[in-house]
Length: 200
Image (cartoon, rainbow, N blue to C red):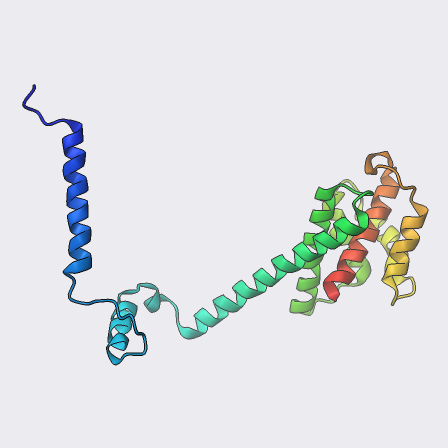
């Protein structure tokens, strides 16, 4: 039993072998990394690397461009949602819970993006109902539509006035002290504010 090597000897041998392999790959490789990318021999090195890359066979230039455009579009949506969520927090922080404001901000950005990118014909009233129905799922869509119409069609150009008028009619108490109708009206006003910010 004493003739068997200990565990530490195995790990020492393994780490020594790893170090030797690393040294071998660094020092003894025939191809050195070209530190000057403008040198003529660096093109050969980079071309060889691209040939080894498995993704180069999978994506064409058109597919790569399309994927990068989609990625940038999604990134812009995320930044837009964050900006709108911050605006909603500044304007409505004492009136509604932060998670409701964040969710309404995300939904509003997605609705506006869908309307703009797909050329969808979705009225402002329908956009408001879509936003609020996701945060207040217990409400009937027809009831939300009736409540959204005055906001969507009042003055048609001045959505800030419609939001301020709604805020003036709601007592500034805690969200949980508001009636369900007041919560729905406030949610619609918040959605209107978020949609108008997303359209800017």
